Length: 401
Image (cartoon, rainbow, N blue to C red):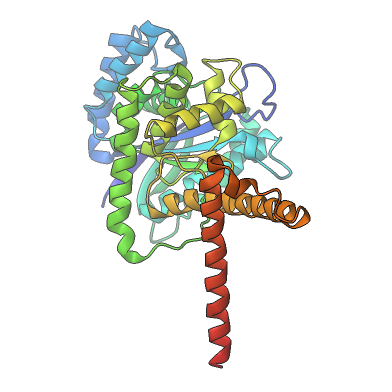
């Protein structure tokens, strides 16, 4: 029987005082999964990395400086770790979106999200051992252990080989140090308050064995439901969107540093979770780390310039955010957003022009008399034809009843 070892750690903390300098915008829970047969190799590799990069001390993400030299060291450690067959599961919790009583209490916060994160393991594995880095005070650790044992582990006569332990990562279970390091890497990618400007380099080394969930995970709603045959179109749209981003990032377009930074983040999130809409506030917080005065107005300008340069960026009616389109639904949502803006605008122009024409007895008719407005005139005429056709069709339907 396969026995999986799961090593847990986190990046960030439970503090919800996001206005305080240095507060983490997100909490990243990280699980490193190793098959039982890989444990000895993992222990040897951990020992090698410890002596080569950490002077024989525990592997700690926080011990790596956040400068260029430190980032190169982080990449080198990651490359060493890739010798090992492991899978990383993560949950990125956006603390600014948390609602409800209790989240301001650390014990409630950690119990709630640990339960959500850990409940996937009993569903997927019959036999497993969870080794979690101990946190908090002794009384809380006992309470957390009891909570997870009763609410998550689900050990019974048929699944006796399931354990959950809170351990000290230096003496009791050094392999938890791998989760510490990898959680720090994920934090540099997904925690906008502490992310690294070269996070894509970390992502490139992790993405083929990392799976991320976001909390809360916001899906988009659309007016148009795609047909099953749209799957081929989805694949094509996904490829074209990706290529449009790569083309812009190649530097062949004259884009500002801010616009390129916006696109880098959107493209990174697209590669992580293609169907996720990235909220404006998240993008702004990310950009402010490089450009402190970056604002929502600047974000809109950046997106406009990117779109003008051929980058496919979707925004959805009723939602505050952007994403690279992942399929027909995203494109439909993008078109619906503009359709729901453009048509009412044309109707208002038509109402205004009609009022002027009627009250002036056609003396004031700017739409037809001024060639600069000929396109507006043609669009309004097309809308009127559509309304007329719809009315005729409705009358025909009634006549057949």
